[in-house]
Length: 125
Image 1 (tube, rainbow, N blue to C red):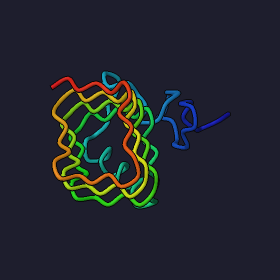
Image 2 (spheres, one colour):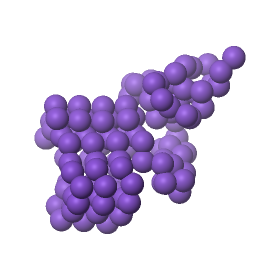
Image 3 (cartoon, helix red, strand yellow):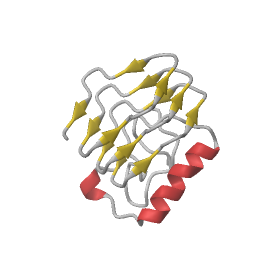
Image 4 (cartoon, helix red, strand yellow):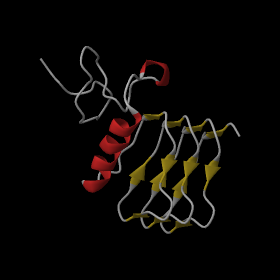
């Protein structure tokens, strides 16, 4: 029996009684404390894991001023609250293909050194 999330390529543990981890559960099925969710997200950063592919992020995401020194994958991510990438520095390729921004997305002052992919990204506001 596997305890890993069933989302393709995900290495996180699935939530109890579910087939997906807290990051890949659909927005309307997330029943997780905001602070716990944010702490788990920061744990990814601490490990320099920038694979967010397919994440469903129900809370404000603040990457302002953050420096990404590895490739970043935000493809198919749904941002349920505003996303702040203001003054973030992307030293490697960043992929937002098919990402959905339900609220505002701030990229003011962000620097992209090695490529930005926005293919089929959706900006609702």
